[in-house]
Every structure is written in structure tokens, then in C-alpha cells.
Image (cartoon, rainbow, N blue to C red; front, top):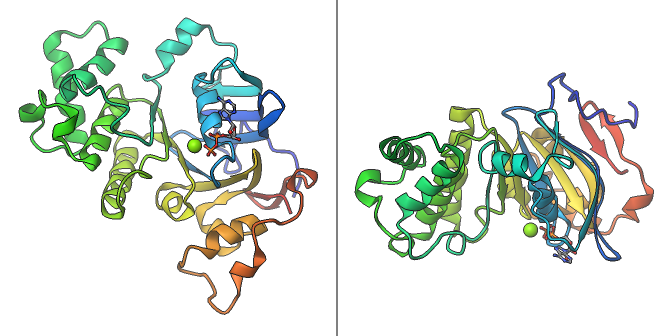
Amino acid sequence: MGTARAMWVLYDGAVALLSIENLNICFGSTQAVRGLSLSIAPGESLGLVGESGSGKSVTALAVLRLLDAAATVSGRIEFDRRDLVALPAEEMRRLRGREIAMIFQEPMTALNPVLPVGEQIAEAVRVHQRELSRRQVREKVIEAMQAVSLPDPAGRYGDYPHQFSGGQRQRILIAMAIANRPRLLIADEPTTALDVTVQAQILELLADLRERFGLAMLFISHDLAVVSQVADRVAVMRHGLLLEEAPRAAIFREPLHPYTRSLLGAVPTMRTDLQEPLSIVGASGGEPADVPLREAAPGHWARV
Ligand SMILES: Nc1ncnc2c1ncn2[C@@H]1O[C@H](COP(=O)(O)OP(=O)(O)O)[C@@H](O)[C@H]1O
Ligand SMILES: [Mg+2]
């Protein structure tokens, strides 16, 4: 197995929908992301996992070109063969929310408290589909509310965010995100603010939407257990560096990097050998930047 990562063609021969190559993000002298390469096939779900501060959110923001001016970005980001780094601002605005949608962690702060939820979803539709009549927009809103299983969409169209529970508010944000039928959904810690039961329901919903709409997903979380419920492939990051990437099953069956193992140590799962003291492996497995990514098995990369 070699060390070259050809990002256009994935290991199973699929052509990438999103392809990130050698992405570097700096804030002054802080290197938040270091030489990151990742790709996502159409309809595929990639889970990006790592502790707080590892560079997950800034990676997502770089894809959407929403990083603030303090950030210095280099590398290639291509979506559907378009170079997102060089795309004119106007085209980027059209693409954002239409072809790539995003949901964030905080359902309350992302919604406008003084605007009915139906109107907020309608606004998301109108921005990208100006040709639609009022009635057509309303139909799309109801459809989106139905798709995320909000009860009584027509009846609750005019209700305000505070009249919904936390889980329902996250459903409203997901409805806004999918209303324009994007091809890629970026979900950054979408369930972190929710309690465990609601979290499970939202994960189930995301899995269901993926299947129904053929949605590709970049699913970000600090929690490997959560990621493993929705991701086909898992990428593990720490300190801005990709440490390991593999199909979900391989991450659990044969984690190669000590950091991945330490994350797994907290997850009692199918094939965790309880005799093996995973917890003693520890999170600090050498200085990772010195070690190049190596393909240990087809599609399984690690800095070991
Ligand atoms: N606007 C900013 N200005 C300066 N540093 C930032 C900014 N945004 C993020 N960072 C830094 O970049 C690193 C990665 O942050 P982030 O992507 O938010 O991590 P996480 O993996 O928790 O999402 C952190 O060290 C953070 O302090
Ligand atoms: Mg984050």
C-alpha cells in the first residue's frame, strides 16, 4: 500500500462530491488545520471526530467559505468539480444553502425568536428559488416540515421557536437545511446540546433523510459513539491533523492510532475486547506531525 492519497477517485472507485486537498488554516501563528485531505462520495456520510479544538469546525467553515478574515487558508476544496476557493462570491452564495447546507449545534440561537418557524423555512426556500409563487413556497415548507416529522406542519407553520422543544427546534433547522434539497449536508455537533433520547431521534432522522434524498453528509462530533451511528467512514483529527481514516467497521475492529483507541476506550461496543486494557494506551501517542499517513489496508489510513 502506498502513501499517496488520490482524492478524486475514492478507494472504491467512486468520484468524490467533495474533495479537500492539503487544507491549511492558520490564525496568526496558530495552525488550526494542518495539511488535511478528505473526500466524500455522493450520498456518502463521513464522520469527522476529535476533541474540542482539533479543527473540525474551521474545516466546515472553510468549505462554506465562512471563515472570518483573520484566517489564512491554503489548499484545494472542490465540490462537484468546482473549485470553491476560487469561486466568485456570488456563485458561492448561490451554492451555500442550496447545494451545500449546514446545521449547527445550537438550535435556539440559529433561529430568529420573533419570526414564525414556517416563515423562517420559507425564507430559506425563497432565497434560492425566487421563481416560486407564495403557494409553492408554502408547499415546500410544509413538505420539509413533514420530512423531518414535525407534527401538524400546517397548523404549526405560524408558531414561534419558543413554542417548540429543543429536539423540535433542531428538526426545524434540519427542515431549513433540506428544504432546497442540497447534495451535501454539513452537520456540526448537531446533537451535542440535546439530551440522549432526543439525540438518538435526531440521528435516526438524519440517517432517514440521507437515504430518502441521497444526501451526502459531513457529520462532525467530538463523540465517536455518535459519529459511528451515522457515518460510513470515520476520520479522526487532533490538533489540526488527520490521524486516522477508515470505513466505520474498521475503525472499531482495528483502530490503528493510539488516539483512536483512546477514543474507543470510552465506547463499549461490539468488538471491544474487554480483556484488553485500552484505556492505558493514552491519548498522547508520539508527535503525530512527524509520522506520514500510511494506507494500512484499502481505505484505511493512519499516522502510525
Ligand atoms: N476566529 C478564530 N480566531 C482565532 N482562532 C480560532 C478562530 N476560530 C478557531 N480558532 C482556533 O482554531 C482551532 C480549531 O478550532 P475549531 O475548529 O473550532 O475546533 P473544533 O474541533 O472544536 O471544532 C482552535 O485552536 C481554535 O482556538
Ligand atoms: Mg467545533
